[in-house]
Structure formats: C-alpha cells, structure tokens
Length: 215
Image 1 (cartoon, rainbow, N blue to C red):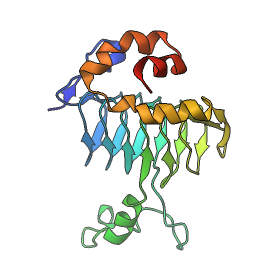
Image 2: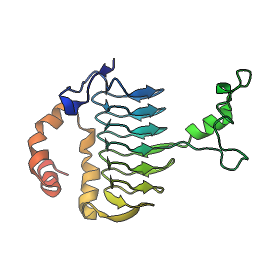
Image 3: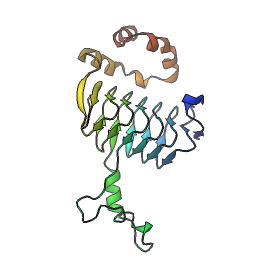
Image 4: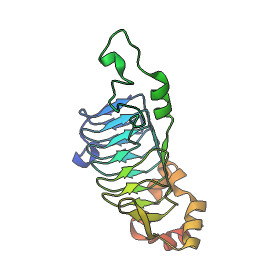
C-alpha cells in the first residue's frame, strides 16, 4: 500500500511495505517497490521503480525502468514521449483523438509503439538536476549524468557524462575498481546487510570498501 506524504527530505520515513508518494505526484500504470519515493509534483507513467530508487521534485518519467538505488534529481525528464513529426501535423489530436471527437478512437498502434521505446537506469546511477534522457537509452550502473545534460546515447557503468548532447568526461574509478564493484554488486544486498555496512559506506573510499567486503 503506497504511503502518501511529504518527501523523506522533510522527515517522512520511507517504508519497507511500499513506496512513499507525495500527494501532488501522479503515478500512472507503474510499479514501485519498497523503499522508493516519488517527490512533489512528479509524474511517473508506465514505469518501474526498483527498491530504494527515488525521484525528487517535478520529475517527469515515462516508459522507464529505474534501477535499485537510482538517484534522480529535481526537474528531470526521462523517456520523453514522441510526436509524429513525419506527418503533416505533430499535434496530439492525431493519436489522442477521443479528446476532440468522442466518436473517434485513439491511435492505439502509435501509443503502443511510443510506450515500447523503453529507457533503463542502472543501479545507483545519479541523474543531475534538469537532465533529459531520451527514449531507448541505458544509463549504466553507478554512472553520473551531470545537471542539464541531454543524453541521447547509452552511458557505460561508472562513467560521468555532461553537455548537450552529453559526452563522456571521465570514469569515476579505474577499470579494475569498476570491475570489482560490478562483481561485488552491493546494490543487491538485503536491508539488514546494508545497515551493517552503513558506517563503512560512509567512511571508506571505494577501493577500501572493496578490500573490506571481499570485492
């Protein structure tokens, strides 16, 4: 059962029983796992939030799988939907026709094709304020999308991208550290194990953490 309340930044505890959804947010045809959060004014359509993922205020997310521990900042747009720009008109009267003529069905084929252009965010990625991620793009595990970036191509795990269109700036870690983190896959740990490791998450750099936990 969703918990409806103010975002956790304001003091609301997240729940092992389901998502926490701000009362002003819209969640439509979507599945949200425990410990997830949807912030003020956000809209989530035809999407999945895996455990611990969250979006901040005024995010617009469509046709997307949001991986475990994904961090989505405010005013982001992920999986923006298409208009039929190859036709004589681009307006949504072409496919949302029942809004204009009650005797005319919506264009189910167009809507289904649009929904099928799926976007994927990997575990523990960070999507910065105001970023846009186009449909059919995959953001790899641990990657960072800088504020204001427009991502049109896949981003490899633990890479940092920025700009319009986004380009790779650098990796967060050396390749051996990346490989060890992917092998350790701490994002799949259960809640109790995360709690036991919390102090080390806070205090150890990545390589020291890997050494401590056998990665």
